[in-house]
Length: 138
Image 1: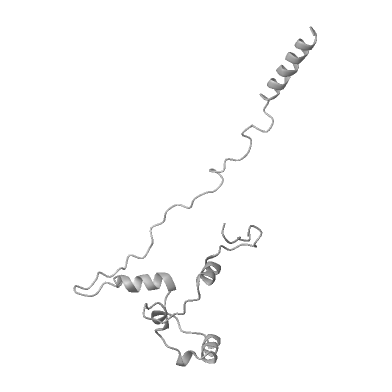
Image 2 (image 1 turned 180 degrees about the horizontal axis):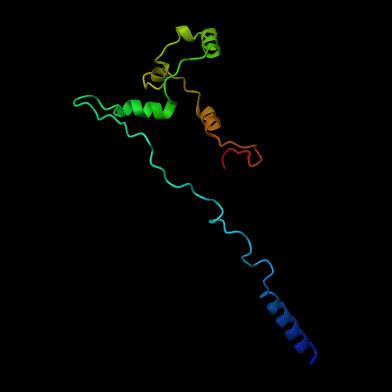
């Protein structure tokens, strides 16, 4: 018992002192903030900006509706030949342009499929491993 305590203290001291070494904790690696150089600011050489004409419309001003549509869907561009052919084959030339308004209209007739169909549609996605059979009355 007398020899175990000094040996244990010696091993604990060696373990504590080994943590003070510089192995892996030195700053010999490159500084990540000093690696990249930034180019100096340059004043553009062209100062030939024309002043706006009094009473003329500002070019950056447009309606907020147009800005929203452009931000969401991008600028209006023409359809490609392939897209036009696919739309024509699907009957796009005779389609109702306001079908989205008609589908969301409360006056649109709908068929009530019952609670079972509503539960199936509202069921969470998954592979079914957590599914359990419901017993009636419980």
